[in-house]
Amino acid sequence: MAIPDPMPDRAWSRHANPYSGATRMLAGAALLWALYRHAWLTLAAVIAFVALNPVLFPEPDRTDNWLSEGVLGERAWIADGNPMFGTGYPEALNALNVPLYCYTLHSAYRQYPLRTVAGFVVTFALKLLFVDEMARYYRERDGRVR
Image (cartoon, rainbow, N blue to C red):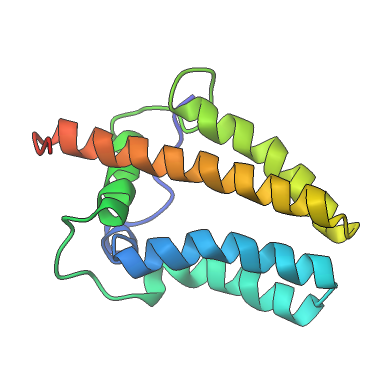
């Protein structure tokens, strides 16, 4: 099922800054660390950062990089009416990531270090694969094949 565009044009333009994409992805590790340590103020700060991240950075001067193309590809994917979660590829990567990340959050809260690290590695890998697919989608959609 397709979802409505979650952000206005200006937010997408700013989120296309590669620093926005990189710090948002790395915030997943910070969130797990804060939850593992039961550092509630840090956890709140990380959640606030993740929520504000798409508008914290300025519009990039250039978008000819993998992270910018991944964000712009996600925007195009949504605009084209494609689902973000489902059984097809690449939306299955997100569908797998949600329950796995919930398990990883639970593992962090319960302070299971190996499960937390393993869960993070797999969820991060799934996220990287999804971003790569979105970057590819963007390049192919706009005829920018590398």
